[in-house]
Structure formats: structure tokens, C-alpha cells
Image (cartoon, rainbow, N blue to C red; front, side, top):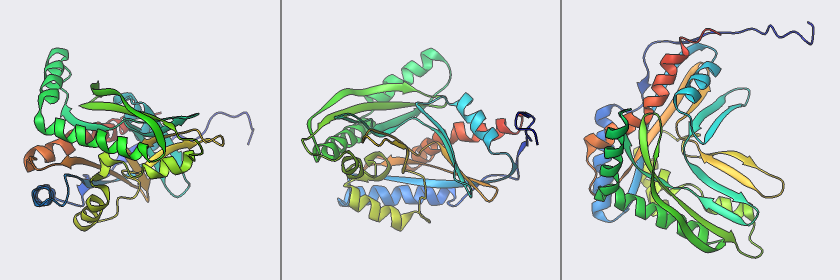
Length: 292
């Protein structure tokens, strides 16, 4: 074939059947209630419980990524092809960013849905900012990020706090915690010491992770981990793999969760997960209509 030839093959994307979850709505709500009970018992202050969906498909999954980036523009847009599987998504959340001596974490905690009406969305953001449960959750996770950074950093401070950020289907409350690497601190170790994100596990982290592995029916795989780059100079930028698809063997896997605290209600937690999945489900629908 001629090297200059640009007529490469193009395949359509087609979802086959409906997406199924490894947990039913009722099972997820039961997990939420168990999470609340663990909070009341004092095992954890907060625990992040998630559920996975699986969508069989045929054709070209890159079309789903194209749809997702147009539906849900985000600070992190990525498509990684590892041969046997692909990971692609539109993550809103910085897990850890290191530039020179400066380190930052941007915890996201507190979510509500968007209507698309500017005035109504502004009101929803105000309600979110005033919600005691969302505030408690957010403050706890900012504290956790400060604690994570202080192991390897000095001058740890909160740069901005509880800023509403608007995405296609949701409004998030976002803060930024930053610090300066201590003399002799290793940037890679600093990154590892922040892992996994408190916003995807809970507080205290270790106990929350033990309970998650008891309650969720399978390992999380890429979900809740990190994706990004690590430079040879020690600079790095890592997104949390949320709002993300894993594609393998003609199946798309995608997952979402929510932070459970003592005051959480099972029905609204189920709704929060569905809101977070809105952009991903819409991308699957839209990808089927892309013909080139």
C-alpha cells in the first residue's frame, strides 16, 4: 500500500442490547445502607461505594470517545490503546500534579445534577454549597488531601475551597490543596503516598478500602485509579480514572460511585451514581449515530 494513502478503514459503532450492572439498584441501595451502618458504628467517617455497568458492542469504540469529549469536555481527555484493551475517558479530577517542587491535589466531593438552565443550575449550586452532608464530606476529603501531602511536603495550604464547577450532566464542588516538596523528597514516592484518592475510597482510607472489597462484587480494575504521565524530570500529572470506559472483548465497562456518610440516603445516592453516568450513557447513544 502507498504510504501516503489516507483512505484508512472506518468502522461504525453499534451497542448490542442494553447495559447491565453487576449490582441491581436494590443491591446498590443495600450497600449504601451497610455503608451508613459502618459510619454509625464508627468504622469509617466516609466510604465511597460504586457500581459497574457493562455494555456489549461491535465496531469502533473510538467513536464513543469522540462522542464523550464533545458531550462532556473535561480537564482530562484521554484515549489509551494497550493492544488487548483500551482505556478512555473525560475525567474532571486531578489526582496529583507535580511541577518542579509544587504539588497539588484537587479533591472533588459534593455533586448535584444539571438542568441546562443557567439560573436553575446556579440555584442548584447554592443548594449544594449549603448542604450540611455535602459540606461535611467535602471538608473531610480536603483534610485527607492535606494529610496525604504533608507526609512529603511543607507549606501545605488550601488554594481554593468548594468552588462549584459545571460539567455536562453534573455540578461538582472542587478544592485545591497544594504544597512544596520537602528537601530530598522523591516526587514519585510523594505521588504513591497520595494513592488511592480519598475521594474514591473514604476516610480512614485503609478501613474504607477493606470494607469496599467486602461489599463490591469485583475488583475495581482501572476505576478509581490514575491515568496520566510521569516525566523523566519527576514532573507528573495524573487524573483519577472516573467518567472512564474500559473496552475489551467487545464490552465497555464503566463505573461510578458516591461518598457515603452517616446522613446518606440510599435513594439519593443511587440517583447521584446515575447522574454521574449520564454523560457516558449519552456518549454510547451518540456514538451509534457517528458514521465517519
